[in-house]
Length: 158
Image 1 (cartoon, rainbow, N blue to C red):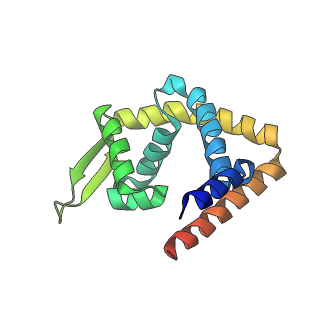
Image 2: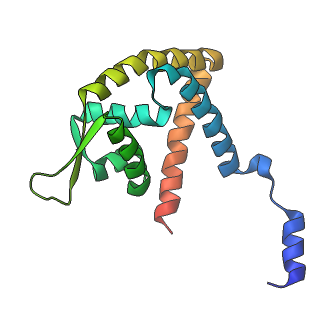
Image 3: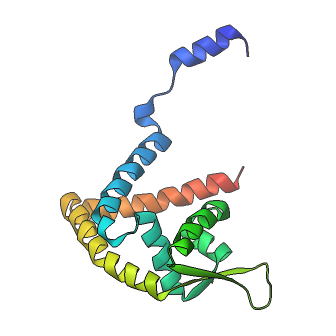
């Protein structure tokens, strides 16, 4: 690519207002801020509540299964889990049959923290649904689920 081609490409630019990635990231930041502020008093961030809730519902879960359930890569999840472990919300132990396998369980402190955060989550979730209206909210949930499927398919076809 020569200098003239680079200049032409850069001048044409990209329409950021119609960039799927940019719009989803902007929406994700706004929603994360809304939910983080809503349950700040619980001591959890929205991402932490989601992780802890899945661990609670599972009883105990392998890190690899938890990553798949949350749609996260293991490296990012491991970083998030280390914070939760330092706060004594979870315990990470070796698997019974394979010491390389890591099992995550929620502690009693983690359970009580999640129990404190869930009513706050219900409150903000209800406000979002009310503000958007049931029909639009359901369409958003359906569209987001469909988008994840499309993105997963495109990622798998690389």
